[in-house]
Length: 363
Image (cartoon, rainbow, N blue to C red; front, side, top):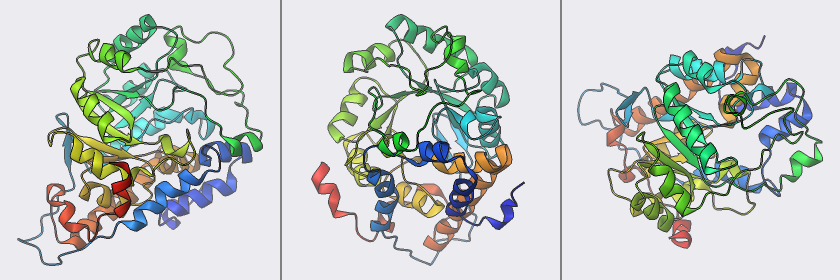
């Protein structure tokens, strides 16, 4: 049993879990596409964003880290991104993750490729899950999946649009990764999409999502709909025009295409391209609460983390995920205090000393 109190940063969690993990599984979690450089760049890009505290507070400090998204109050602006299959790192998989998120007052976004069936995950954290949609087989199956998610109690639908095609994950291949025995896809089985043994690669062929598909999906659910995998302002505007309720700036954790722009470099231009009331979230590279504060200052309503909570899950199940969330919240709260603000709504671009000049290349 790991003494989690000795782990004082997300990096500590990463190093401890990687030291104990099976090599192939460790590389599957850590690796990206091609050279893996985008995985590193997502995190390193935050180093080019410098905060500018004002020190003096406008009024007595009454710290409030909460945010509200689609009418749902969250303890602080960090959410758990969809990852799969979580059974790779812990037997309790998404059940532990969802319970941890609920216990800390945040949302867990659950993948269509979850190990446990989505109804079981919702039961573990009622009202605290969003459903991430992959398109499988046919529109009839997609429609059935949407109806399934709604009937289970999903609070929102997140359509991932940047993972329709298999990626060239060379480091994962070199490590000899194969889906271990005992790892399954419970939601796909519940939907009748998967029968028999899962593929050894763990990947199920998907339907590439088109703009027409996205318009069709919008018409099939009344739940808040977010599009995950947007990096270009023109695409963000088009998502808004199609009726999307939110946008998630993401490059799939650097796992799909080598050489893709780091997400924090894409964030500001996307935020500027959509209406102020349209929530933009950021996914990719957040390894501390200070990075979350930087993203919020640049216009994100919240950030999503993936690998960090998997490291916590792998070390200590639900308690490990909770500890990662506690660290991030403490760091985020400290950043607010040091910046001279008491509420998340006060955190804006005036606290960024110099916006990264690389934004100009992607507008």
